[in-house]
Image 1 (cartoon, one colour):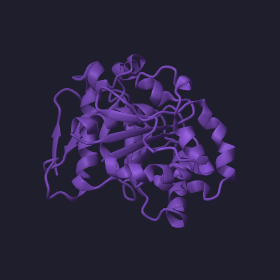
Image 2: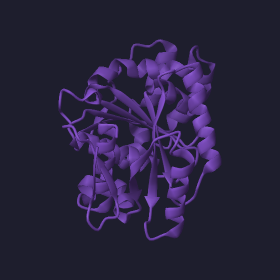
Image 3: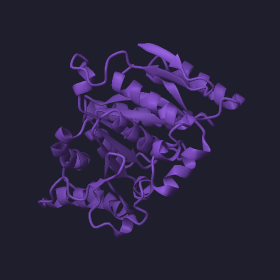
Length: 289
């Protein structure tokens, strides 16, 4: 694994030593579902899902993003500003699994101009909590819907709401790995502990293949002493048990502005420090460090 540092950006970047399209890198051919959960809001989870997905697509990967948050922020960030007007969303697919209806798995998937697909969400997903809790095999509903799609994509990234309710648990059951974004602005120790305990419980009881793909430090300002201290603490406290990505996502105005125009950071500010950081992150994810 080679390392380089982009001049004047302060972004650490780890680059995989094998070609991304080579035949001798086992991970290149693996299908991977990754979940973006956080028990606290404000960690950049939706921006991470969108930007990592776009970065993976730029590396030639087939990417599906799944909006599993009733607020529909990922859907809005990709340009569908009125998600409640969409005819088919994630809620429809989960309900179809519960009711045994024959809704084709690809129904409702939207294609974005940057080469990524999206299963949108809207407020109807909030109304699915009780039906899911009452359903048979309630933790498996998302997995049932996603299974036919796995052959069509190299990466499926699921953007979860900042809770540990039944819908995020469904995402854990469907997932191969969990990517945990943590803001460098504070150390959410209790939230991290609860999240990692839930991942461990799902792995023991339902999905033995579930792993923690890594902890990603986001919204970092290298000029800020607190941000440096939080990063150091995370690496010291969690680095021995979990992978902490070498890439750190910087705080950038452009990253906050891009969703307003329905674009990724690469279309909005492709030469900026945030875009470079997500390129590095995608290389870490594909190369598996």
